[in-house]
Length: 633
Image 1: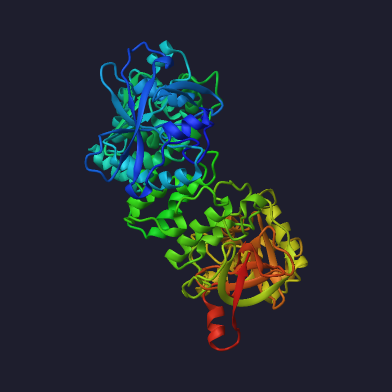
Image 2 (image 1 turned 180 degrees about the horizontal axis):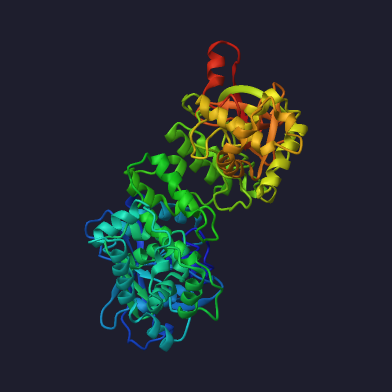
């Protein structure tokens, strides 16, 4: 079940009275009832008119329930319809649904199947809610999952020529990689790939004469099925799988492994062009390696270690699949619940995660985020928001809720994870908070008074650009010589180029030296009291290069600010004067909050020099600062 999935109305158009009264009798959710299709046999050359099915209701908890197969496929174009007969009634279904049924029908016996577009009444929201909650059980209870990739996008003769030896091509890629990596067994290769050990550049050594085999695997990965949301859990929960592409049967698991080798092995540009042209899609599709990455990502999600907390697993699943395809945004959460339950060992869905297609999209995402934060006793995932979210009014979203289904361009890099602004104090949820609010306890440590707007990557791409940028900072923020060291730390988010906290005296001295190298201009005497020895400047050019790397990583698409008490900070591009800086329980980074009439809008997380290692909590303990409740809207 994939593509638009059970969460989207497929536009089935039978007579409503017949549909509801004859095909879609009410299901008993307490008995875990579902509908199954008995697909009648037909001759190999039968067309869609020959598809005849009987539909019946069974209970998943009934030990006498029939064996059935579940079909995993992509719906495709919902506007393109085909007619089939169910219980003698002609109904219109997505054309790829009909194509899947036509491919799997037997010539001499009835085949019992579950396929979402027909077996779920897509017009009944309450039924969709209950059936989506059963999705894990539906696929786990089937004796086999049939993966239908669709038909090749070229002629039958060309398609047969391209994929008739797909398993041979996959085996050749795997065998070559094992030889190049000096790996003796397939199991060892799988273990190495699962640990993300680098194989970057491996494919550039791949023999040119064998690229046609790589092209065959790419042609398979080009199918829409690999980018759809629902398919990962459908395969993960299967007891057995069989994979069809056109008339060809292939090994899905080994094809995914080959895709991982190809994607992470980084083919050269020339290799990639050759692969794309040989795949059969060269004249009809633009070249893109995204298809390989989608297949590789699927394998990685299936192999994701389960030795994590439930909240961390849910967050990781959402991160991995946030750019998967589907027109129903709620399905980004609902489509992974079965996979998440299997990995986390949680048998009953928490109330916050119960599927409800009547709930606004913003609340679906908010509830998933609440579950993660409450489970982890941490609100660090607020960093993933990057900048205040802008939600359509109909979605009823909040500034603190990440729009998982929207990809943010020009988002800043994540701040380093080695900080602990909250001093390890955990987040304790207040269960009284309304649906759209997040209540956080914390300490207000300042207000933004001066701000230099977002820094573009282009401005930081050269040494001269960086020097000009930092000279302008010193002027705009009225930075005095004594504040150079805090500014130097701020511009690299308080870490060395290796990602270590700048706490050691020698490291701080290096940062100060590197800062002086970066801002030195035609009048070096201005900075003599920072670094008076020019010989030392020359000897620290390599350190300056490392500092330059850290600065580019930390500053691009961010704003640099100063608070009323003189603290330097690094915040989101939308930072403004008047924003409040707060350290809250369960967050390793201070938050920038914009005051509203009844609470605060989350601007994003930030770096504030001198408040990244629990100093605010220490000040609270000595009564210098007080705790308060921040209501995020």
